[in-house]
Structure formats: structure tokens, C-alpha cells
Image 1 (tube, rainbow, N blue to C red):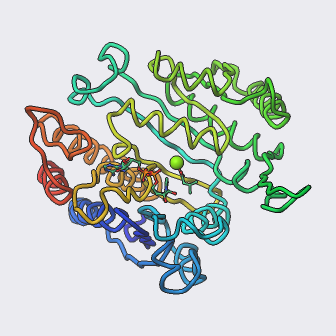
Image 2: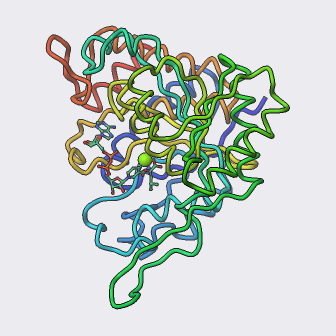
Amino acid sequence: MKKHFKIAVLPGDGIGPEIIESALKVLDVISKKYGITFEYKHGLVGGAAIDETGDPLPPETLKICKESDAVLFGAVGGEKWDNLPTDKRPEKGLLRIRKELELFANIRPAKAYAPLLSSSPLKEEVIKGVDLVVLRELTGDVYFGEPRGREVRNGERVGYNTMIYYEHEIKRIAKVAFEMARNRRKKVTSVDKANVLEVSGLWREVVNEVHADYLDVDLEHMYVDNCAMQLIRRPKDFDVIVTGNIFGDIISDEAGALTGSLGMLPSASIGERYAFYEPIHGSAPDIAGKGIANPIATILSAAMMLEITCKLPQAARDIEKAVEKVLEDDYRTADIWSPGTKKVNTAEMTEEIIKRL
Ligand SMILES: NC(=O)C1=CN([C@@H]2O[C@H](COP(=O)(O)OP(=O)(O)OC[C@H]3O[C@@H](n4cnc5c(N)ncnc54)[C@H](O)[C@@H]3O)[C@@H](O)[C@H]2O)C=CC1
Ligand SMILES: CC(C)CC(=O)C(=O)O
Ligand SMILES: [Mg+2]
């Protein structure tokens, strides 16, 4: 069994470096406990890379990623770079990595943690037991479609993007969804906007065709606007939600509300050759530099890395259990704090998790 792993570490901007530091501390403990070693190579990405090199994804960073067993990523973006054209912004660095590494399947699990139920703005009976996965297609859709641009037409400014999916892109993500559902509660909800979009019409057709090989799994189709509402109304009815890049981006942030905070949601992005692990949230400029960010999403992303890349499911379970225990013991970062619980900062939360590993 492989015992040594090369990990590309890309902290990025805002809270990125703070939460990545937490994940690395947790991985240190796991490495000793399970007798495995990690060789970290740090790379510049996003705004930090723009400031240093003028490019949000310098060739050296991409090289480090391609030579690694996995990539651990923080977040990118911030006000400082907000006025740059979209093609030169920090976020473009992330989109380019996803495309370059062909990370087409973005797995975003959302779970309601029992100790956070009573402080949720959502009703306890609605969210208790929520356990779903948003499976977001990550390398197609309107984020990448051509043509795209800004120009002047008939004397006024226009901006446009192209929402496009190829059949093979829909097929491969649909297969992942059905395979995943087979190991869960055997239900797939495919989310689209087939009542108005051509691209969604094709999406629905292809998902139905792939389903023919997975008739043991229930398939339902849902329009994205309805899904946004049902996700809050009856989230327990969802198991695997498969959808395109932009709908998945939005729906998965909404799923964050079910878990208590965006700071609780991890993700893994998988392709044929590479694997990439990142929290679903962004660089949180409003709290960056204060040391108060919730590190749990990134620590749980590292747990996904241990399970998927390092084939150490037990180590992943250890981390998940430590997180649950910390919450049971009432430790909370500011985003999930409620009266009567103990408010801790990023470093303290990390230490409390480590104590329980
Ligand atoms: N994967 C990435 O690198 C992503 C980058 N972005 C970028 O991040 C920047 C900020 O975007 P926003 O729309 O504000 O989204 P965001 O996800 O950074 O923040 C939204 C809200 O959630 C809070 N939050 C997020 N993560 C948290 C954590 N770990 N602990 C506690 N609170 C947390 C923030 O403080 C903020 O109030 C933008 O430049 C955006 O483009 C946004 C989403 C994903
Ligand atoms: C750069 C954005 C597409 C990042 C984002 O919002 C996400 O991946 O969830
Ligand atoms: Mg997003």
C-alpha cells in the first residue's frame, strides 16, 4: 500500500492561508498515527500569484499540481482584484486548474450536525438527519462556454456567455451520480432548467439514457428554481443531486445553510488522473486576517483526500468523528456560535479537533 504522498498546497487569498494551516496541522497528526508521509510543495495561485507574477495560475503552480498525488486548495479572490477583467481575476486561476486537470466531478457532501440543529434558523425537524451530496459538473457550462465577451453592439455595451454541454460531459457526470447513489440511498435528483434551456433539454435526455444502466437507482428530474425551494423545505428527501456547473455552484452554497455555515462544507474534485480538495466557500474577505475563520470545511476536505487519494477511510472517519465531538463539546467558531457555547478562533478550533483525533 502506498505510504508516501506528494501534495500540492495552494493556500491562495483571504482566509485561504489560515484554513490551510489548520488542515496541514491535522494531516501532521494523521501522518504519525497511520505511518504515512506527506511531501508538500506550496504553489502560488489567485490574487497572491497575480501580485507576484501577474498570472493567477503561474506555470510553476500547474506543474506542481500535475506532479502531485493530490492538490489541497484554500480559496482565491478579494476586493483588491475585483476590478480586473474576468479573464485576469484570481478566480480565473481556479477555473483554469479545474480545466487543466480535467476535474469534472465536484463532490460536495452536506450533512446536518446534531449539535448545531437547535441554533439553526431552519426548523430542527426539517434539517435533522440531512445527508446529501451535490455532485456538480465542474469543467463545462457557462463558466467555460465560447463565445464569451464584452463589446459594443448598436451603440450600447453587451456582455455574454455561452451555456453549453457536450453529450460526453453529461454522460460521465451522470455515471458518477448513479454509481455514487448505489452506495448511498439509491436516489438521484437531476437538476436543470429544461423548460427553457436547450442545454438542459439535452442534459435531461442524456441523464435518462445513462439511467437505463442503473435501473436499481431512482431518478427524478427537478427544475433548478424548484430545487432551490425544496432544498430548504424538505432537504431530507435528497440523496445525490447531480447538476451542471453554475446550478451546482449556487445549490451547494444553499446546502451550506443546512449544515449551519459555509465554513462546514468540504469538497473533492475528481477527474481521470487528478484529485483536488477544497472547501466550497470563498476567501471570505470580511473576516480574512482576523484568525476567526471556521477551518472545518478545509479539514473535512483533507479528510476526503485521505479517503479518496490515500485510501485511508479510517483516517477520514477519525477526522469526521473528531469534528462531531468538538461540536458536541460546544466549541464554535464565530460563524456557528450561539449563546451558551464556547467561542473559539481558527487555531483553537484546530487544536480542539486535534486533541480528539
Ligand atoms: N473556491 C474559491 O476560491 C471561491 C472564491 N470566491 C471568491 O471569494 C471572494 C468572496 O466571495 P463571497 O461571495 O463573499 O463568498 P465567501 O464564500 O468567501 O463568503 C460568503 C460568506 O460566508 C462567510 N464564510 C465563508 N467561509 C467561511 C469560513 N470558513 N468561516 C467562517 N465564515 C465563512 C464569509 O465570511 C462571508 O460572510 C470573492 O472574490 C469570490 O469570487 C467565492 C467562492 C469560491
Ligand atoms: C470561482 C468560482 C467559480 C468559485 C466558486 O464559487 C465555487 O467553486 O464554488
Ligand atoms: Mg461557489
